[in-house]
Length: 338
Image 1 (cartoon, one colour):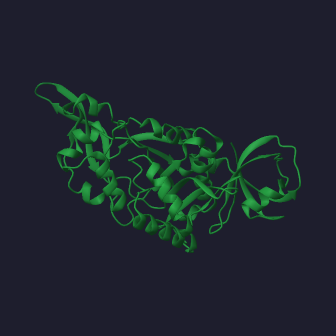
Image 2 (cartoon, rainbow, N blue to C red; image 1 turned 45 degrees about the horizontal axis):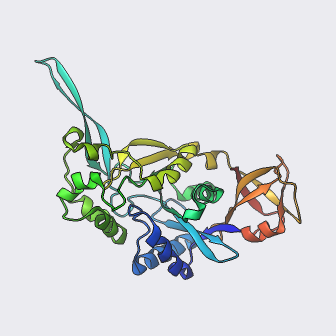
Image 3 (cartoon, rainbow, N blue to C red; image 1 turned 45 degrees about the vertical axis):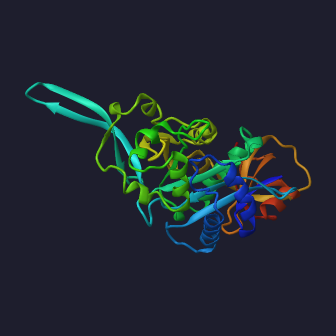
């Protein structure tokens, strides 16, 4: 059985394995022991803190196979993007120039450095083992974070964003980075992303041009990368798009990948999620598949389960699932149809 739970310091060796296999653009999962340890400790502190309002907390989750104790994936929530340092991105909008004398008005697409998205809640760090790609457990790994937000709304913003990894080739070259960022840093794309994972994007963003970059002046290969998703990032995009997330006018600073945005009230796992009490049983006649979580903070757990859910009645939950969720008779659980 696979269960999503908060990360623990003992997970460090397995997280390093996941980090080595992750995409270069997943900067929140750095392949560095010291940085990963800091990330885990910060997450443990966040789960322990009795926060009354939205703050700088990060919540790191891992997907564990209870039988083998192997970690199969990880995902994360940053409660407030840009809380301590600006959260930089590129605004992709038309720049309009007009001449009354010539009676000409012309719009040119341009990219402008900004930190408009600071203050939003940020989903990041999504990585799942290749054997689970396209499975219901990928859905669990991504969407259970949203169920956690739904259970603890006061800790998060009213809108949620995420950056999807942009296009790079099999050798790790990003046409967008080569055309834009590389002119200001003598670094390959993979090294720039690695440095962001170890530190932050702020020191790199501060050296980027603070005037518009006119898109037609970029090479065609770079233009084609604006809003383009890396093939291995397509599943993360598709899951959140089904949740109600939409692309907006912002792209990633380094690879031009798209940014997704959704108001909390429009997110499916939040808006359509509901709570019910638990009735432990030995067996059930399952009629539907659900994502199921407890509403705990420090001991949050989430699973995928086939259940017989009836409106207004306690949910019959097999004893094995009760144990996986750390719940008992009368406990409240949160459910959303898969």
